[in-house]
Amino acid sequence: MPFWGPKHPQFTAPIEHGQVVNGAIAAFKLQEKDDGLVLAPAWISRNINQADPVVIANGVVFGFGNGEDATQATVDIGLAYNRAENRIAHSTHAELHAFDARTGEELWSSGTQIASFNHFTSLSVANGRVYIGTFDGLLYAFGVDRLAETR
Figure 1 (spheres, one colour):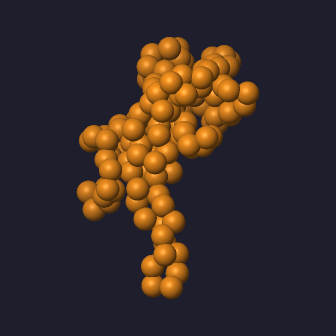
Figure 2 (cartoon, rainbow, N blue to C red):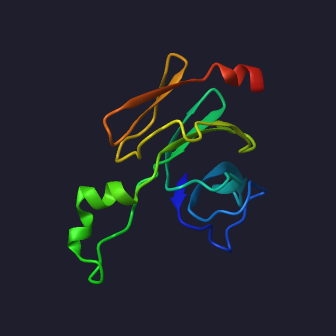
């Protein structure tokens, strides 16, 4: 489950991968409790800029930070802020991450290879690649073959 902003101080997981300021991915396990089922925290990823929904394939959680400026228009800054020029000027780049589904350990990251931010698109995984589209109209494909070497 992705979330934006800092981790709530009362939320903890058995495995945490550093301080979260801009967002992260939280993983949960289904556990039996009091004759029922509950979701129990398993791990929290490292800090991710505007974490968005993940896809999971073969024990790997693929997540990304969209890098988009998510400032909401207010009375102080006005509705004009919502124009594309402002969003583009204040956004950064998307960053793709691959995490071990059991531990949340980061297997690899795209770093700064993606030039633009992601705006309302999601990840896809097919044929040994993970795909992400960006605001500038590009589709990036990252091979997942390295995972066999790192696991």
